[in-house]
Length: 237
Image (tube, one colour):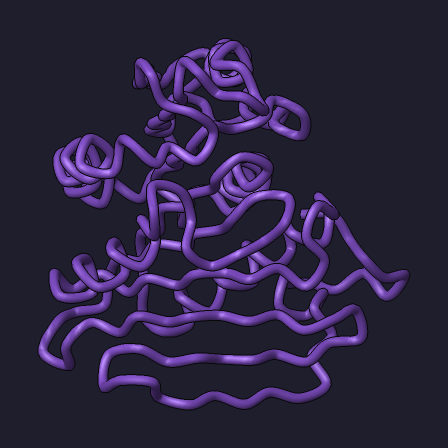
């Protein structure tokens, strides 16, 4: 994980340099958390599973170059948070401190994974839309084997060079064939760098994947359970 300060922090959360925090329960299953740092405000929406679940699995969801908490497909991240928390998976949605700053955003996502681990998660999936595909992949490589899989939506290829370090870790990619910002070839390049993975091409859809919500959720319903069941040992190259 890249360092933001000369003091060489030992964990992503240390790298945040948190100077204060607060949180409020929006519902019994959803918390709004604010972490004040020397480099901006990191906001998390944390979907908690019911108390009688093990909390052994988690997801961290991050947005694009402009940030945001809803994700693609007309609020996919919110729907995933509601649905998967009910299934016993803690879901954290990340609003970056400095959108479009790859190093800072990578640390934000990594810190969210670390917080999930501290809350009991043993297996975490990272997801990123557009620019967010790069932090999601970088964190999956840097926090192996805790992160057991990665999902990208209309990812860029810049910043994803670390994908070679996934070493066969589950990688699921979605991309609209009419993406007006990043062509589907960007996801193809990332898949090539990773040397493995599944790319779901979405005919007729654009960068926001606004037409494909049901397709995304159906495929994730199939893919996530198997990925959370992945053994904690790092996969062989």
